Amino acid sequence: MRLLSVLTAVAALVAAQAGPVLATETTITLVPPANDPTVLDAARAKVAAGDTKGAIAGLAPYVDAHPGDAAAGRLLGDLYFRVPDFAKAERVWKTVLAVDSQDRETHGRLGALYAAEDRINDAIAEFQQSLPSKTGYTGLVLIHKRAGDLQQYMSTLHYDTEQHPFDPAKWTELGQAERTLHHYQAALDAFAHVATIRPQSCGARVDVANAQVDLNQVDAAIANLKACLAIDGNYYPAVVNLGEAYLEKNDVTTARPQLDRALALRPEGTEALVDIGYIYDAQGDWKTAITYYNRAIRADPMRPEAYIDLGYDYNEHRLFPLAEAAYLKGLSVASDDGRLHYMLAVTYNLQGKIPLAREQYRFAIASEEPIVVHAAQADMALLPPQ
Image (cartoon, rainbow, N blue to C red):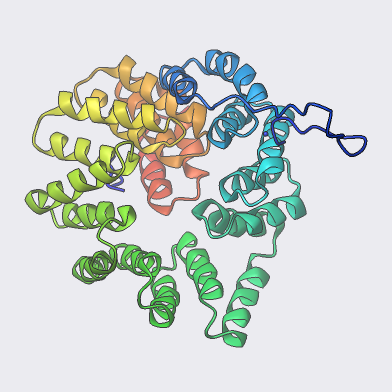
């Protein structure tokens, strides 16, 4: 995604019968209440406005009454996780999985929760059940790193691909692990194996394209994305990534129609909304850009990208209280995001709030993002001595 920062429940009701129903008896089928998407929208809006407690208060009774609404259950668990109230988050997410044990998104969330509690084996098991998902791939790398057996994990992935050279799932896991570790050429090599095994797979071609962009091979990435769209012209990840690839080439004229099409395919597509906001920023229309960033936050308030760009715009126009508010809201839902910590540090620094800036730079330096770490270290060195 293009960024403006300086870095670039159980089944609802089950009637347990004690014996066979007689012909003269009347059976009643209890139908669970229908899902209400407006409740979810209202909760997201409260999160976007910084009212996490209000979002929980409005969402919790609804989730209790609608155990089959997975999206609402996931969001409520997210909010409990961020408060933090791990016990309630675990309960809500387990209820979602009681209805659909194959819900990969929820398995990924449980993995993150168990990782935060240092329940290593439980976290690994949940991340594995979340595959294929970015959360699962990234989570497995980070949890093995914390456990101190990352090298063994990577060796196992390499061995598995050698023993099963035509298994795309094993090559994909290897590629995603390498990309998480910023080993972009190794990631590209692994993804290329998947694309060779399954040339009609759009997902494989998007993975290849992402690694190519990481390596600044933007034209090659565009070719792969177009090949995917020739197979499935409505594949949202390829459409939005194609627009982003053109943005990498500073070709806004070609990028914009792709991003508009992505937004037509997925009106609440956070990536497309942030990217279009970026275009308005590049054209000097920062106020319109802000409307797109706010739409992205309302669509998915648990992702950090729009908070970063929103805060950046406020920072650029010296609206420092608004910038601080944007970054702090972002950190309330993504507390380990190094970019948010770095940008908040910059905002504090510009206002002369040096102790606060120093604290945020330290958080940024402790992040897993090399570019962020380097920038934060450089800025920290310029601060006046304590």
